[in-house]
Amino acid sequence: MPWLDAHAQVAALTDWLQTERDDMQNSNSSVKFRSETPLLLADKPWEEGGILRAISVMPDVEEGRIRLYYLTWHRDDFTKNALCVAYTSDGFAWEKPDLGEGHNVVMRGSGRKLNWGCFFPQQVIHDPLEQDPALRWKMVYWDQPGTASPYGICFAASPDGFAWTPLSDYPAITNVNDGSCLIATHREGPCPWLKSNYLLYQQTWKYNPDLPVERDNLKNIHRRISLWASESIHGKWIGPIVVLEPDKDDPPDLQFYWLTAFHMKEGFGGFLSCHHTIDQTMDIQLVTSVDGWTWERRNGRRPILPLGALGQFDCGIVSSISGPMRIGDKVYMLYIGRARAHDQKLRYPELECPDPAAGIGIAELDSDVVSIP
Image 1 (cartoon, rainbow, N blue to C red):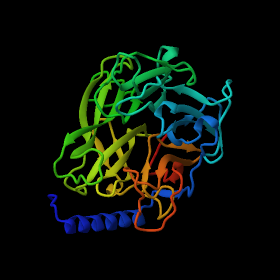
Image 2: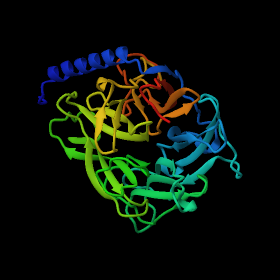
Image 3: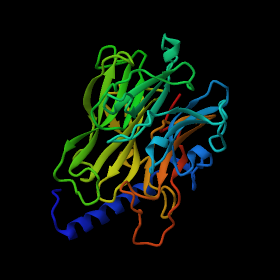
Image 4: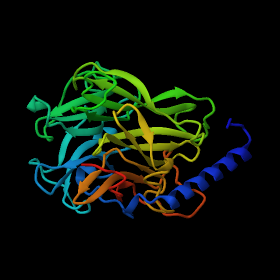
């Protein structure tokens, strides 16, 4: 529907959107459990004043243990941002190890204050099929790696996942935006692009004059998901190619903020963070793909993880950068939860509600719906 200046129409649409989301949440059966409070607290000196964000989660080399990479994100001073490691055996009790220097930090940024974004690790992958041992751990992150370089999407590598080395002093991709996800595709199967061993998904933009502008930080900018492909992690990246964007069957204020891709037992799955322009909230839909290029919306386009209940720490935003993890016969998702919306305003400003701290939440998903190895 076209956007008009009449406040009555905007108010009516807002009410309709909220009713639709309430119906979605009530009908959602993919979530078996979700936490009522954040899992990890910013309780270390280098985390003080920061928000913890789950970046990547994967089986650790030690049997029965899960490794989590998380970011200590400091809104007041992004130069303090640090990538850290934690471990768990059950998904609920977490250990922050001393890695030998009195902390669990594995990487910090260049320390430069950027005009756009900040030091932001966005995905860590373990790539055992990589022939070079020094490159078997790979990371995609946003930074300004060199004094003479622009800011952009960068890559780092590690032989063990702890000691990281940037692959270049110049970003691999310099177009905006700073939301991206990396996945390795070394396997047989359909692929539209010859020898694309790595796929990178990035939030990209197009102009949309019909979007409401009252609260969004990017006026009339429509967020969507595009793809880059490369044969090598330090080779030439081909793209961006649009692979996911809202259509006529979606609410008119919907935007796609982030795609977290992961391997399923068959093909690929993805957690699609959906940004709602009017009220600045975010929830998560499930998408799947045979080849990583053509994606289908699942669960009737209902959120696989809707917003938390009124006053909960995740009632304003839920977004997942890390993929799912399997512990025993259960599948879990780690996600970022906030009671404040994307524009930092309270989700329910007209009500006297708590304003709990943001943090990392956990949800158990239906393992038949999110079928991972």
